[in-house]
Length: 496
Ligand SMILES: Cc1cc2nc3c(=O)[nH]c(=O)nc-3n(C[C@H](O)[C@H](O)[C@H](O)COP(=O)(O)OP(=O)(O)OC[C@H]3O[C@@H](n4cnc5c(N)ncnc54)[C@H](O)[C@@H]3O)c2cc1C
Image (cartoon, rainbow, N blue to C red):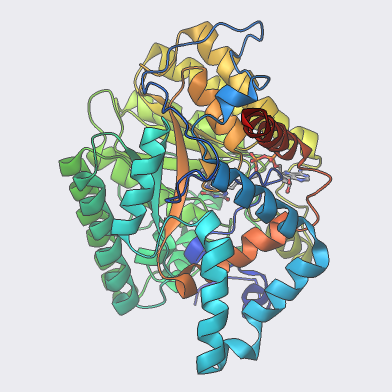
């Protein structure tokens, strides 16, 4: 028997629906380009060739010229985004919206349609790229005009059996096809969630087994292929306290199928020359996710540019150690490796699970430590890619982290021409940072979930929850947006 020590009841309550990954942020700016035309001003589309702009700030980021910053954003979008931002900042309104989305009203046919239409016209249009890959492709076209790129995220449920995994795989493969059909390099990455193509239970079992092998290196895992190190000396292993039973024949056969699915997806990405970015999830299953990521990278990453990228969550105390161990092993094996760096989205879950088992949280004690870890890991990766193969995606809405990384990248001579560095923000959020970085000469992508409104609902609920009460904290983007709206209004008034 496996020795997963977290009671299933606790997990059920704690686990996010990772279908459309819960993503935290404290900067809910809201200016996603939309299909709607500008309503007040005709804006001349700026040249798509953006050169490095001199600035007294070593990062090269300029947030002072709001006209330039938002020059790609139609006024209608600015207005709608400002309204959305305010709405998501009014707590009772968010509470009501979330209650409606979770209520029995969603089970009543006619009423459900009205609610879904309402959600589609507001939250959904703001945070999601479209109901299918074709519409998402159109949204990507608009981003491209604005000098940004897209990371396509097919919104799927966690899979619990092979049937669900096969269905999800088809969606991921279709996403690669659509990405391939779009203008070259408008899609920077296709995103995959391993929890959608390998049954959840199996990921838990594999993680248990991997953790046990970390405790006892003589513990043999016959199914284990070549991988980079998954744990560091300080990685907490508390999820697994008893020696787990080996995988059953049925589990081994499910693992074979999961390997085949990931292999097929990687091959498709290799053929399309579009890198595949593996999202990180919670630590109960992350060892298995890292295992799949690293073994696939060993198989598919060749030459200078990685095809398979993993994700490191820098809110974890062991993040830097694991990043160093994995990159060192990749270097030794001559494998170009890519990482997306994030702070991490499962903080409350991690803390609750650890405390329910009587252990210290794996998350840094203070937010300051997390910021430091993110910035240190960024700096480490930037130095690595400046001097050798590999790639890094800096996925953050944090302006300070963006500035620090931009300054370091300038110092190292890494810019837009260097395809090894990508900045990324969620679609519908932190537009000022996205455009600021892009104007400063960097490649910037928006993380764009797409899929039917109902499927993407868990993601929207998370967005609403995270953005509640953010009015005070998210002053930066709101202020810039308001400044630009005011400037445009004045221009209109002056015309009469
Ligand atoms: C493109 C993209 C892809 C992403 N992919 C993933 C992914 O694969 N897996 C994943 O888990 N997340 C992912 N995220 C979400 C990310 O992890 C963050 O939740 C989110 O971006 C907020 O962090 P930030 O860097 O934007 O920083 P900020 O805006 O500065 O946010 C900081 C947040 O960090 C949290 N925090 C972290 N550590 C602490 C601490 N010690 N004490 C208190 N608060 C703390 C707080 O909630 C705080 O609000 C992704 C985000 C983006 C933009």
